[in-house]
Image 1 (cartoon, rainbow, N blue to C red):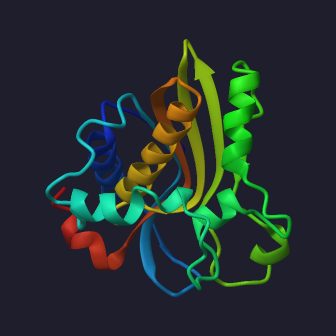
Image 2: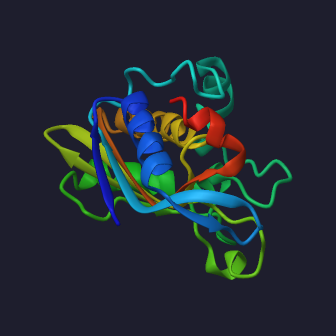
Image 3: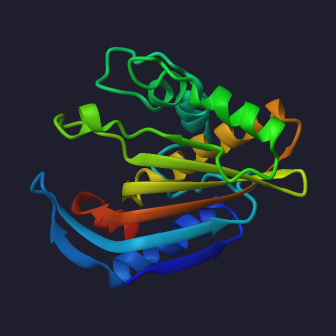
Length: 207
C-alpha cells in the first residue's frame, strides 16, 4: 500500500518512514536471501532538505556524509567500481553524455521545461550484471525561481541509506541551482521498494 509523508526536513522524514515500515511493513526474503520488512511506493516530500539533515541514531555522522556523499553524484570517475552515480550522470554510456550539463542548460534556456531529466539506468548493462543503480530517475522542475527535485529509487534501504541518499541528492540540487542562478527548493523521493534489513531491526525499532 503506498505511503505519503510530508516531512519538515530529512530527519523528520527518515524517522516517520522507519517507524511506519517497522510497524506495518510486510516480511520478505529478498533475492540475496536476506530477510527484510518492506513497504511499496513510499513517497517522502521534504519541505526543507537543508535543515536537520542527520540524526544522532543514524549510523553515519554528517562528517561522513559530507566527505563521502557530498560530491558523489558530481564525480564522473568510476573508481574501478561496476558503476558510480557520478559516472552515470556525468558520463553516461559509450558517448559519455553529461546529463548534469544537459539539465543545467535546459533549465537556463527553458525554465518551464518538464524535460530536465537525468537517468542512471542503462539497460545494456543493468539487465545482465549484478550491481545496478538504486537511484534511477531524476526530474528537475523550476517554480518561482526555485528548483525542486524528484527522484525515483527502485530499491531503498530506509534505515541505513535513505538519509545518505537525500544528503547527496540535496548537494546535487544545490549545485544545479547555483549553476542556473536559482534557489534550491524541495526534494521528493519515491522509494518503490522501501525496506529495512533484519540486521537493522533492533536499532530501527528504537528510532
